[in-house]
Picture 1 (cartoon, rainbow, N blue to C red):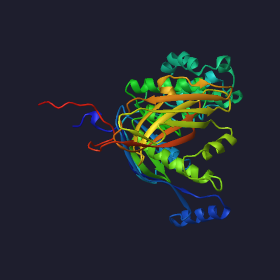
Picture 2 (picture 1 turned 45 degrees about the vertical axis):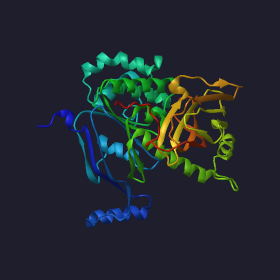
Picture 3 (picture 1 turned 90 degrees about the vertical axis):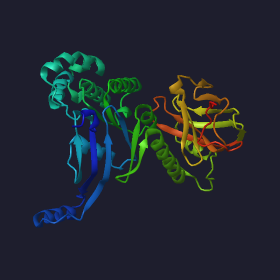
Picture 4 (picture 1 turned 45 degrees about the horizontal axis):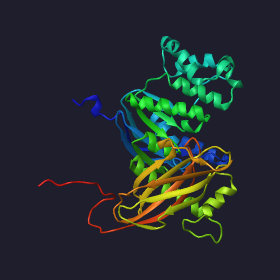
Length: 403
């Protein structure tokens, strides 16, 4: 008999979901006729089709994709909120789903009363919730408003209370849908710290987010959904890089002004500056295009901040075909940018004795908001590493043979 650890905590097999279109009176009448005659409805939309993957205990998986790709539908099917049209979901353990934080709260009840209500809805015994009530109140950190009716809360306060209740659970599988995109900066950091501690305790995470930074930071694997189907599955670094390559190309096509070139010039940044985004104003690479194997390369530049706050700069190296090689950010290394003015920051990074094997690469500079949640601008520089090609792979690793 297989041990519990050998059985996947979650197995999704050929999952599909169709929705009937009811946007017109004629459509509704056709649906009634189809039901009465027991015919399959022709006015259907396939939100999800043929999705399969497994999630082992202690693993972390991200679901990424554009709006409308089927991410939320997939999570609702896994959580049992709705039923699949095709395929099946197998779950061997307990589950907590943070899909719509605060959706189970009663508007007339106080925050304190809603803690008991929300806990009861997810099956937490009254004795257990009483022991954790102070912990939940402290996590929510909404002060005396805990005694006010929920109907008087701001959306941010509702989110705080909803996540705080979720922290009282100890599920085998935690499902989150864009939880890290809500609330203020301090609350987002608190949520991140709690999720990281949950994973450290052996928890299993299924994360849905538009933040590739958080995918790479917290998840080992990723699934990219496109038009309801799996476009790519694999390591978080590999899948997010493919997704970013696709998204960058799409954005460049949509926003390129008439007459603009398609290279890595300043046109995308100029467009972003006009919209008030965080912008990479300048990016300089030395040497400019080519270097000898084992030489050093530096990147420096300036960033525009529309609100004066210090953004996050992420530097990545990819092979010419998009294969990710390395990435590092100011946030990961705890390095502040140099403030040049009220709205401009400077950065610089050196890669001494770059260990890349000869070949064609691209250096990428990205700017994210101060929370590291949203990617705003990207500048790419082509890089050629010159030298004899007698080794295989991407990097040179020092080694010594015996004998």
